[in-house]
Amino acid sequence: MTAECDRVDLEPFSLRLARPLDTARGTIDHREGFLVRVACDGESGVGEATPLPGWTESLDDCEAALERATERAGSDGYEAALDALDARETPAARHGLSLALADARARATDEPLYRYLGGEAEVDAVPVNATVGDGDVETSVADAESAVDEGFDCLKVKVGARSLTADFDRVEAVREACPDATLRADANGSWDRETARRAMGQFGGHGVEYVEQPLPTGDLTGHADLRGGPVGVALDESLGEHGVDAVLAAGAADVLVLKPMALGGPDRARDAALRAREAGLEAVVTTTIDAVYARTAAVHVAASLAPLPACGLATADFLAEDLASDPAPVVHGAVTVPEGKGNVPAGGGSSSA
Image (cartoon, rainbow, N blue to C red):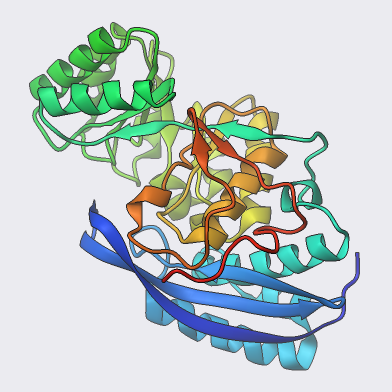
């Protein structure tokens, strides 16, 4: 579809987190970014660019890239502006413009975003996992049991910050408390090769489905060597450093964990999932703790690929405030897929920030 696009507006925002978030770059207590607004074919579209250093570019680099894109759009149109945004160098900026255009065009065709992206079937909901944080055994079990009581049947346990023995005890206790739940673990690249091999061998006895990012991001060879055992290898941060093609070529993963914000847009995340499937791998979709526009877009990406395993989309509670009311609530372990036109349908909320 060809659209006549004439302008882009940027609106900065800052949102408080409900609790501090520990990342590879330190602890953060708020999320900052930009709303990207465009006008296409008589419709308005809203995108979100919320960079998270360590996964994407810095806030300053994101702003500079969006300002350059704004100038390029004014002279050459939005397609040229989008093409000029480097998905590897400034993925959050590209995500913002890509989502804004997709939102406007989905509205112009009177369909939900997931159908515009290529989803062929109507999808009501996408299964999601609950995250069990890095607490002691008692806290981990309590968090896991609470999630199961709320309807989650997939639990992702954070590991790697404690000793391997402590993590073994935590995973074993969660498995005993929640025998029917699918278990995953997320090490955030904290192990060396020997530690990872020991961990995955032990976790296999507790039915852990996969370990996310067991080794540092740069070690594709090490990740490839870990495959073939009872526990799968999922890569997240490595995708941002190396790109999807390099990960697939190295045979470094069984599962790709796709963050649209870190990959440069909903379109690129969906394309990565399709390439993973062609290579015989699975994909799940998650967020970088984004605000409602990007978070809902990630839901649409997942819906466009349905059916998928449980995805990491139950992240709204990380925010103490948001830019609009949430059109995609989590109910009984699944996130609702909005059926109105576009990404966040009209009436999807006035700002509560």
